[in-house]
Amino acid sequence: MVNETLQILNIPYELKNGVFHFEYRGIQMLVDQKGTVSVSKNYFGSIPHVMKDGSVCVFSGIDSMISSGENFELKETIEVYIPYLFGLTAEQKTGEFLLELEYYISELLDKQCDVTKEEIHTFTVVEIVNSQNLWETLDDISDGCWYKLIPVNLENEYVFVKKENARFQIEYDEVYKAKLRVSGRNVSTLGGKTVFIGMGSVNSYALKIMFSRGLADITIIDDDKIEIGNLFRHAFPYRGMYKVDAAERFLQIVDKKMKAKKVYSKISFTENNKSPDYLDDVQRIVVSVDNFFSWIQVFHYVEEYCQNNCEIIFVGIDVYGGYGKFFKIEYKEKNQFFENFKKFLLDFPNGKSRSNMVGTGCGESIAIYDEQNIVSLIKEMLTCNSDEGVKYVDF
Image (cartoon, rainbow, N blue to C red; front, side, top):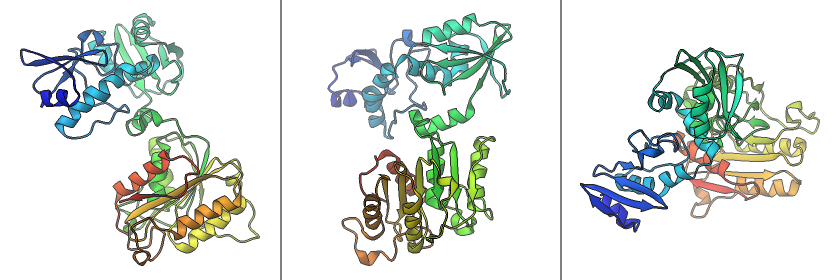
């Protein structure tokens, strides 16, 4: 397996006592017969995820995704993952060490360490420049005082540390750490005021994933309750609750201080409507509703009251569940919005027949799709830039 992988990568190697020795991108590496990849033990404490014996831990929460399959995993570890670790900036390396600080205090500093859930109100802030500065700071801090260690330019990746009688206590921002596990370095990429119109299956996952990427000012509009038919593909399957309450319940489980503005209503446009205050200074509007008429009502409503430069996202699933679709625009003028909406509502992707489509919404239809389909749709939606037209995601 190992020699085949190295041949694919066109890497010359030397075999010593059953261990493959080679250099890739200036990094000396070793791979044993089991496929364990190692670098020099001297990198322990200076390169994240290098263990005490020099082996490289590939089960981490950073942005390098290793696919399944032994050969492919080994290839990606050598070609992508290890160069990625070595190429991190000093502050990014520090951030990675802070996420696993109890391990390094135990193994690198040879000190005992406990993780606490204590609420910390009084502390001294220390900015950490690099990994060497981190270990020196831990050695120098005074006993009995809490310190907030923050990597330079990464203010969200902090940890609280206290030392007493050569024993450490640390307290993580568990919410941030949980978000990091699903969003990687995208944790803080979304901000500003966001309004979700509709909180069915699609928008429930849109909210959940976007919340992991930094949303804080959230408004949710829906008048339905969670029913049995929603349970298997809704992100917040709390039967009997209003969908807006179910969404807020999730937000508060993650962060008890989090409050969403809730509007128990179905959007219905008339010319006598007053502009709602929840659309004031909004940065983005995410729309996913469940029938043809609702899409049209929401379109006219957003068209009338949306402010310029607001990002508008319409996202839904074909009535039979064969694919998802979305468009994103920076709202500037009505014609552009209308053309995107018309194509979103009425057109269909190449290879699909109009006879296969009874409607164009999600929700109350015979659509067959699962949570994985929704997640792939939302992730594709977040990856695309605004003003790229209607996009389709096959299931």
